[in-house]
Amino acid sequence: VPLVESGGGLVQAGGSLRLWCEASVTDFFTKYAMAWFRQAPGKERQFVAAVDWSGTRTLYADSVKNRFIISHHDARNRMYLQMNDLQPEDTAVYYCAARHFSIATMVGDFNSWGQGTQVTVSS
Image: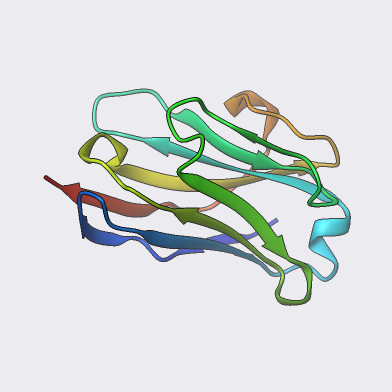
């Protein structure tokens, strides 16, 4: 499933950004659970947040809990990641990912990925 991320950029510490991931499949979110991952230079790709197909269940990495919010908008076929109180350690390429139905948090659980969008947080 083609996925395209947008919304990355440069922001100062304490600022906010909203990423979104767009799917080109009709009624996408009735079939797929979605997630955001990130990868900093020299580090492994790590889980950030996930949402199930219904949008009612969400999971977050401890490092972003209470700062980031994942959601999706069915009519627009978009998934969002609202990132607040950004810190330099949040700097990474952010990827959206999809898998059928059930929510998950491991890289290997997902079989569709976007190309990534860069987020840079300056101190």
